[in-house]
Length: 401
Image 1 (tube, rainbow, N blue to C red):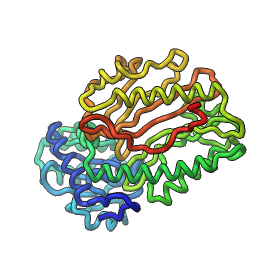
Image 2 (image 1 turned 120 degrees about the vertical axis):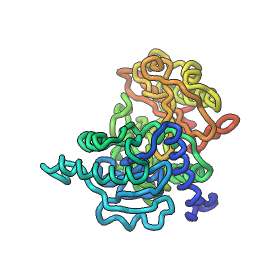
Image 3 (image 1 turned 90 degrees about the vertical axis):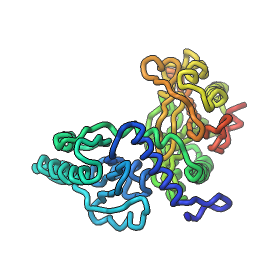
């Protein structure tokens, strides 16, 4: 058992990792996949509980997992790190990984890719047989071609992985709640540190400091901006001093404790004066959008129905609308993406909102050419009868008026 935070339920770690592995295997069967080769470290952790240099392995194919529907699970681990996964009941064998990348192999990359395909192909034949359907994640083009040339049918692993991760088990929900509580403590520290003259980077560092101290992993984005840097959205924290009486907007995007994403957004006011009428208007509209959309989301609602019933973004703010209305969330942002009515025809897809999905409801309100913008977001659970709000950070009464 993992020691829980004070006053929080304990996590049955064995039940957690076996629930996740078994969900993935069931989705592989559903999608006709005999075995997966997973390179994304988040997905390796999801399937086994094994964690190792997660950010590094996002861009280096030097660690991967062989997961068949039936048979031994083999982790090909980074050189010198085999001990990290020792004792995990979800892994039957740990082998050294072959790093099929140019930086590791240099001019011999083609030969290394063929060697990688030979090693993996031998294991595939032993466990699932010739001609098996293999779900593959991002790997060098040459390695993928070599594996296909060995007689295997290659498909993308995304569909079974995303469908598995979309539904959360009871221990996952405990992890998510603990991750959110820890991140909320970090954001309270940020809020308390806001003052004119502090830079965006200095403020963003406070988020990191507490997230890491609370056992979190890392922050995925640099979305901590102030004043005119809040419009348009997706500017990044920099060395700009925060001006007096400005808005400060934050999207947490924290891979927190237990590896679970904590994702909510808040906008603050620096002072010392009271917020302006325009700042209150922007904030009020963002607050209205989030709460309207929380009111229509729920089990059994289709993605299309949600888009049609979602808050009608005023023309003034439509051009700079957030790219999604809502999205799934678990160990990172994930399936499903729920699009605005404006975007459904071009980008949307249908499906059903299901119990035990965790969803983030988004808003960005900022006019094209406007001085500032407001970012708000809530993190919630779809229950059997409605929703449960999981994020628990207060909104700003001074901005709500």
